[in-house]
Image (cartoon, rainbow, N blue to C red):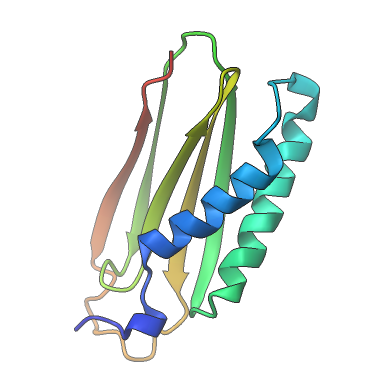
Length: 133
């Protein structure tokens, strides 16, 4: 049974929130190693604020990867043990002339009371890949 729309993990909504956060922080930035920590923290704070405003029953975990454009590749993977009918993941990529930014949002539903006994019996492999040149 699918969760109601107001309780669902909707990747399009997550993408809108995170894209806005990235744009507000990095829109006019050039890659500077000394600024990456501040940029990452700002993207996370802004994204979490926007995700909270969606008023969905989720706990969120975000990762931010900032990488200078230099021809190197990036591959990242995660494994999760969750209820795939309620929980979700969304990847948002962004780039400009000097850097790449990849934000991954994991959403874990806080509504576990109505979960079937075998709801968490599935382990999903979540792969985030980006060819960066």
